[in-house]
Length: 80
Image (cartoon, rainbow, N blue to C red):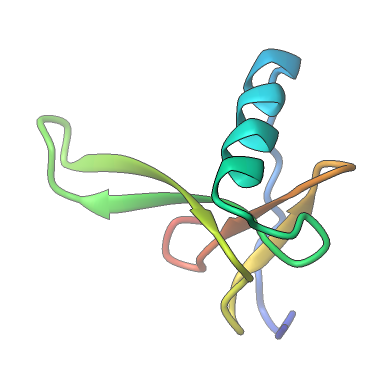
């Protein structure tokens, strides 16, 4: 994972949302030691952006990784 010129990402994941993330990771067989929730911002939508949430097996090489304790959140540089 590269850390060169990456912005700091601060986010809040509510306890209820964390329960759902862990539930979906378990259902998809994703190992919380390496996998997690991807949060993305993409061009499009009514306001010019749309947001995405996915469960992923592992972070991409250039992702920012935000440790949430028992799972991780992955954010690509564009979305950050």
